[in-house]
Length: 141
Image (cartoon, rainbow, N blue to C red):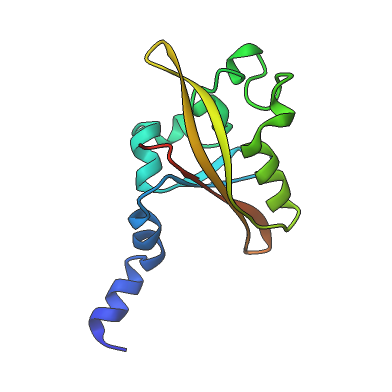
């Protein structure tokens, strides 16, 4: 391995690759709580990591259903039918979900808008802990 290759790996090749993905990619727990995200997702969420980490995705994306109840994302009567939530739950149980079509209703600058998405989820394990890689194609269109 060349010195340049070693230096590249030392600087976090995994982070470079993660941030190179053009669509928002999140690492979440089974309750869709945000644990990590890439640069494309950061453009949607804002710069303050401390305000977004550990919060649920629907709250961060301003899902209209998350706003229906004080409990937020995952707590409204509509949430059990959420394709994002169902896909994350399936991946947390070991099943890969690839490009499921769905629509999210989001509040954007005070107005409701519908966003067409493809949701993919992959179960991942790191240091004996299980997580879900959540990819939302179409969110940044």
